[in-house]
Image (tube, rainbow, N blue to C red; front, side):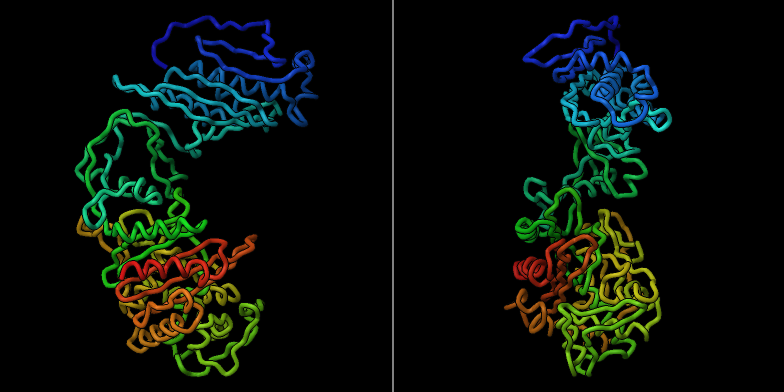
Amino acid sequence: MGKRRRVAERRNTTPAVVGGVIAVVVVGAGIGVYALYGGGGEADRTQSAAGHDEAKKNTGPLSATEVRTAAEGFLAAWQQGKPAEAAAATSDTAAATALLTGYAKDGHLKDVTLTAGTAAGGKVPFSVKATVSYKGLTKPLAYDSALTVVRGAADGKPVVDWHSSVVHPELKDGDTLVTGESGTPPVKALDRDGDEMTTAKYPSLGPVLDGLREKYGETAGGSAGVELRVIRGKASKKAELSDKTLVELSKGTPGTVKTTLSPSLQAAAEKEVAKTERASVVLMRPSTGEILAVANSNHGFNTAFQGSLAPGSTMKIITSSLLFEKKLASVNKPHPCPKFFTYGGWKFQNDKKFEIKGGTFKASFARSCNTAFISQAPKLKNSDLTQQAQQVFGLALDNWAIGVPSFDGAVPVQSAAPMGASLIGQGGVRMNPLNMASVASTVKAGVFHQPYLVSPSVDNRKLATASRTMSASTLSQLREVMQYTAAYGTAAEAMAGLGPDYGAKTGSAEVDNQKKANGWFTAYRGDLAAAGVVQAGGHGGDTAGPIVASLLKAGS
């Protein structure tokens, strides 16, 4: 808190009545904590005087007086620079002491003023004003936060329920606040044409730009500025959250990182996802693996790269390649598509319980018949789908290095009913639009090319590879069923006018406690491949399909 003259603590014992409301001002070190509460002051004082009756006060709902007293004590101690005293008023003394001590010592925050708002039950909102001061540089900091008063587990006394977010809403438990030269210099991210990319131009690129700074800040040629930053702890890093700048005291000199993003296609992707809630899309080049666009309706999390969602029937692309290889299906040969098929004790069915009598596998793929795939489960080993995804499509090995954080998909080995469900993209299978755009790219290119946002030549990193490729027969059949689906199947409406060098697959993935399924769509056209998802959107052909098709058209 810096060197300050100590002022004897004093308390105004005569509350002032303002507009029928009692305003209590707790004054310490020349800084005020304000709490407003309604009439009934005499009853409150009587209740407070009776507060020594532990049998009555340590159980049951908290009274307004208990909430106010606990909140006032915590806030007053915090702003007076007494972290141990403030921490003693919380549910986790050790964690609170560490963070509150670091607030002043490591965060270099002083002149703290905390103003309490009106309590709602046990929750008390408050505003924070402080000054960030570091080596002669100063800047103000202001934000809103909240605390919740609960009964302590040991004795039932009112305490502040401790979480790091009490100190600042951007903090997760285990995170810290640090002011100093930023650990990572800023970077200027460039598109493939050499122009700077900013969130002002491309609103959903925030997580991507943060990831680029974290990855390349130290090596891109820039110098660090001075900042107050949230430094992520173990739990946050595991959740792949990046450090976050709260206040910039002095600008650093940015280095530059060139990406593969196309400015026109990125703008088109941003425009498309903005039309729909919870939409995400990725566009890439099959022949190289270059990512040309990535966009999300939600600007706070990069679902397109880091999402972990059941991909539904788009997974049937991988499953079909497996069935072709094992001679369990052939494009134009008859293939069963009954209304129902029971496997592992689960009864699976098709959308609206349809069936195809005497149909071919191509017809089943184009119409997305679930039972056509699950009926083959008894003939497969539990590990077959996992190996196919890993060895041919380069998925689920946790070794992609695209230039920013990403999730490479998950296809766990399962048995019985969950194994059957995994064949149609449910069960334990998890993907995101980046993964499924890569799947379509592998079909188009005939070989897996790991997607990347920054060229591997920038940092000599090694890209992931697949251990084998599909046979010529399997690849030919896979392209045929995807082309047929784009022309005549569930993807035909979205892909209208984009043929003939194209292929597509729709998907719908059921999610527990969600009325509408997640709608998926993945497709290729020429040397472009894309995939998208609209969460809680319904059928993929109607929701994600138009987004993907629009980008494939824009890139031609």
